[in-house]
Image (cartoon, rainbow, N blue to C red; front, side, top):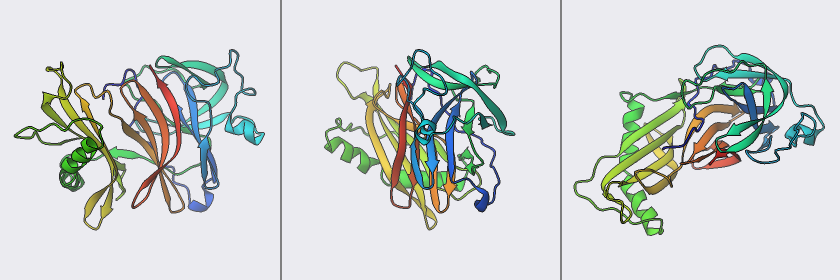
Length: 306
């Protein structure tokens, strides 16, 4: 992917160890930016998720305040929480952040209403966000990258190899784009593979195959690329693909979309993942429920773009 200045994250979030009986049934999640601002995006309330805050370039009041902003708290007749807990991308102890006011910040080429806090601005070390914030005591589970030498990586390679070609053919037959035929075929490479830290959890994978042949006329220097994103769910001692998405694109991968998993949240027997999904010049924040046979996107909101 080549998103411009897109915030991304595979967060190393400290697990908040709280007994299930003490875990809140109402909480809100926010993205913590390097400039010290928080962008709320999803609220959980006794089994139901909803958007918590305006999306990028939405309802940008010339003089926004904590009281005039449309939000989940305004719907409830409550005040915007002033105290938030932030888990940094780089790991370590959580940090308390206190809201000072509402501010308007840049979200790539758009504007975003955000909560300005007392977090000191930090120089970005990468295109990743600073962290994830919550307004309550919630059981956040950290996400880790799976190593190339691990058995889970090799299991993922086998599951992808068994289905990649068929998914390419299906996508081409649907009229998305023409199928590239080359011999010999270049191998499929896993770009990223993520799971909950220390858990036998579902995994999220991004894989790609590059071609020597151009997909579009007049682009001889830009070979075709096929990009696969999917969840991998354990089935006995193997993994199977759940909700795969295949993108037939070119070397710029402008029409492909993939996600960075940020954290996992377990409430009862339900598992939710916090995602930052990005394309070439846009991204969204999302909450995805991961099941054994399918996934459900419960919240999605624009996070910026050009």
